Length: 252
Ligand code: ADP
Ligand code: MG
Image (cartoon, rainbow, N blue to C red; front, side, top):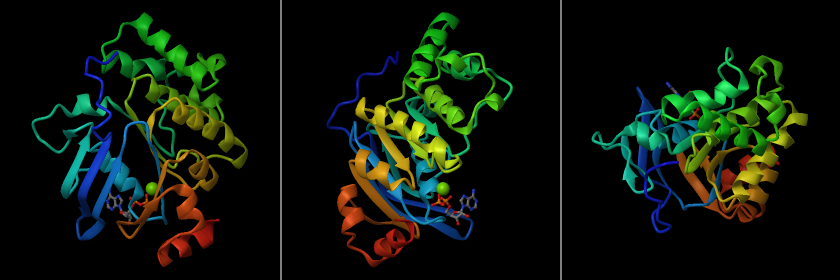
């Protein structure tokens, strides 16, 4: 359990203001503003190369923003004085490529960071791991190795691993894009349950059905800016901007 005080409902879970990010001469994020309230599910859509992954990676400072501010639960994560590891421990991240440790069993994949980063003892780490494997429907895979699991099972293990750190919020970067179509549904079911449990989530996805059903808000990015945002149903059925309409006409 985290020793941090519970986040206040008045403080945004994520607050991004004027975020710019360049790689050399390439300006990838050109002033992004967004706010995610505690418990909210925000889905980010947009064409390839529009900066969605870079945005998510700036939110937990896997990338160093060029300018602008990022606050997590009110804490300015660009402040050089803060303990970045502590802030990061509150943020779970799930990638397109599941990034499990191939040489470790499912159980050890779920316990290693709990023990090394959170300092939990073995018994507690195992209990937390088992609880989260149950949440994703994989208690029978506790001793399996990643290579013996389907892509969908590996992604559910990756989600359980992130949850085992008791994050306050979760970032998902196209979590189902690498999966065979028949495996996508199980992963989305787990994410839907998580959303309904009250988890704050920022999800880059092309799964418009999921976004429409589960998302509280949808953000359409193009060319490094937020072109429009709103209720998913409204953005999807009545987009205000021509760029959004052009994108949706290709993917829907
Ligand atoms: P998206 O996730 O929307 O497809 P990305 O954020 O991955 O977009 O990438 C946006 C742009 O930034 C692309 O042109 C990509 O090539 C570039 N880019 C991303 N990461 C790096 C990096 N580490 N170094 C240089 N260019 C990068
Ligand atoms: Mg991406």
